[in-house]
Image (tube, rainbow, N blue to C red; front, side, top):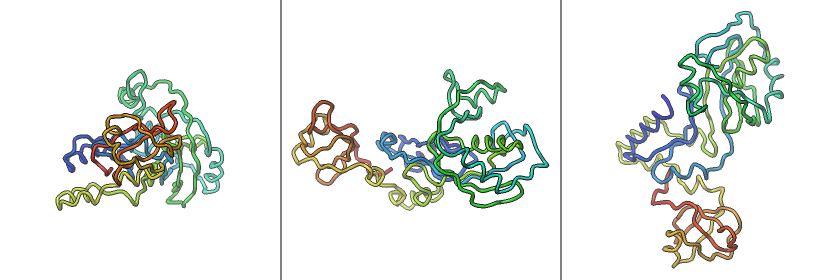
Length: 285
């Protein structure tokens, strides 16, 4: 299932047309896919970007056109005999700020065309390297001959498929990603996730709200400020209001205990609060 298909299914289940996801997950992968509904779709840029975490199985001795095990084979090395020690010795080389060349089978656009569309036409084009950050790689165990389970903590924009491909190239035998689970996307963790089937069950029982992730929790990394009573109309109309205690930067704005949205100090007007994003009733993501 593609990420786009997940959004379509959530749209049907909730009956809310305005839905969007926060970061594509490959169809063969499983795990966390943040989906926002209603006015919450405007909040993606305000969520804490604390990177992503994956559990990935890497399989040495094979190369494919998609850099994962589901692609068309390009090269096989049946005599590969990779050890855990060899794999761990690579971690330092692939940790920190590194450059990745995006795979052809990716949603990145070049001249307005997605790379995977070109790849399906049998075309390969030059791709500029992209800087990504891999903050940690941990070996969790060996799952089979030439197969190892890794935990990868990385920045958004990192291709774990490409990491596997590059590690295989470093050992000279090739490698592909053979399984992938996203265990965290920003602040959203696997334990917070709800399976689509469970979402359907809750909807049928009229208890859909139980699956929602409170927006206040999703924005908890911002400080809270409370607007005095009497300023609601000005705030909702985008008029700056005096708030002397307001510090520079963004904050969660409340009025009468209700979250109004995200606000900040107006440029050139210290102590004046102006809304940057106004919610329209939805308090769940």
